[in-house]
Length: 280
Image (cartoon, rainbow, N blue to C red; front, side, top):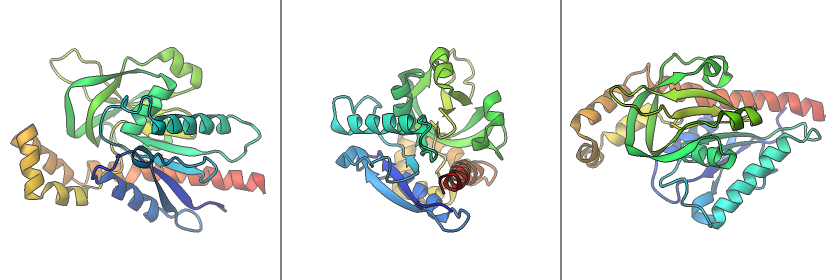
């Protein structure tokens, strides 16, 4: 039986309005492990320098957020966040700790994770990636439990100005990480495909895209006249129309929403059940 039913949610939105936090909390609250539901506990990392003690929870989800992945340099929140990652990594690699700590990293947090481990080049894109796009599994992705149940390619909500490219394969091999998914191929360009999902270890995994995105509420949110006009002004009417059609398709982001974070939570809670029995 699990001893801690609270999931630490590290909010990286810096106070900006967003749909992500609601989606993450709903997925956690609706997930039913073996005996009790899970409960989200939120920490405002970039807004209030709130970073949990790693012993507060066994499961964490670190959110997306706005801005550059370098804007925390010399700021207290980044030092605290990287110390949190250091402690999680050390805890999980200490053989005296049978109960591991499980963390999922989304978009902005995924970029911070890759900065921490220095796994790839982080650079600004030539243009914003905004919409619902195909994501492709690698050989490792086909075999990984996180993506179990997804087709290839699968669809995901992408919203970013930054990207991870030119992976450092030596560093990736050194820590035992695996590239699980790559960006779509962009015709008529020489752009390298960005790394869209990485498993750092059995306990740490993340995605560049937003697996928490809920198609029902996204259709309602982006269907508002003010939001519709805003998106059309920036990205054009054709992109807006295509995005809304893909949101409404039950075979696209609905499947991703129902698969990735639930798979992470299922794996984490199952492992913790076994690890708890070892402790007992």
